[in-house]
Image (cartoon, rainbow, N blue to C red; front, side, top):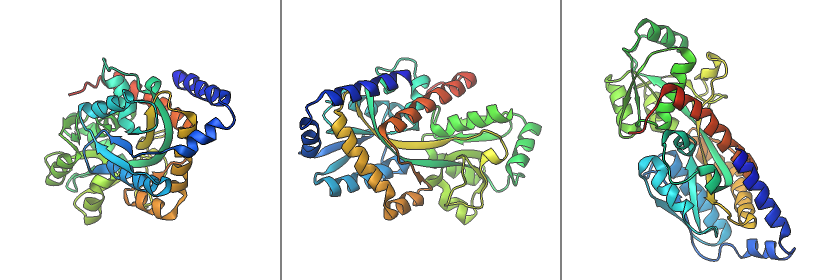
Length: 325
């Protein structure tokens, strides 16, 4: 986080040193051609949908196409590094998510430092994860689940979208906070994990809400809690984990970043447009369909969030000794 603050002060100093007419002119001219927005995961899911919603808004508002490009691989590291190595001119941007904070500790030898090598532009949305169980599991609430897990150590299978995925790390966080022993079963993505949860091959999973909301509403899965500090509008009757586990908060955040040293005028222009989108009732409704809560703020606010999350998940990863696939 110290690196980020120093970097942000450097941007502010450089911006202040520009001639008074130069900075507005630069911002006014941008964008002069299409902008590439890299999504470092496969199509579908909250990151991809968020990118397309914001990309369409920016295209309409700024008069140039914001083209979405999915570049999955290595737990988001392939797409992330591609953006970090791009020119810092505002024409190659990255939809970043919780993986960025997790990967900083999960991978021992990355070719980049996310906080040092990126410029935060704007946070977009916070998406709750849902703690859900197979309906046949004899636990109707979080306290009942904890009691059952402690009575059956190692016998409850916890599915996730893979080693080091946000669902896995949140599950490990739950285990540390409750003293329970759940057996992690990694899958290649959240969808197959949910399929096996419905069939009873595994008993519990923490997935982003968009992945399982339909199954919860249909009764195929039982939601015990959401992971955010506040209840979700999509599942208002489902409690938060923090209501039973003091201090528990976890969620997937999504935002937009650029390569390091991207001009402050461009960052400011994009931040303003994104915050305008997040204030629009139609956009809020679209994000609510994902179970998400819009997350407006300044570039500095977003940088602080990234720093705080990186520090938080580093402790969980080290304590649980999580290793990538």
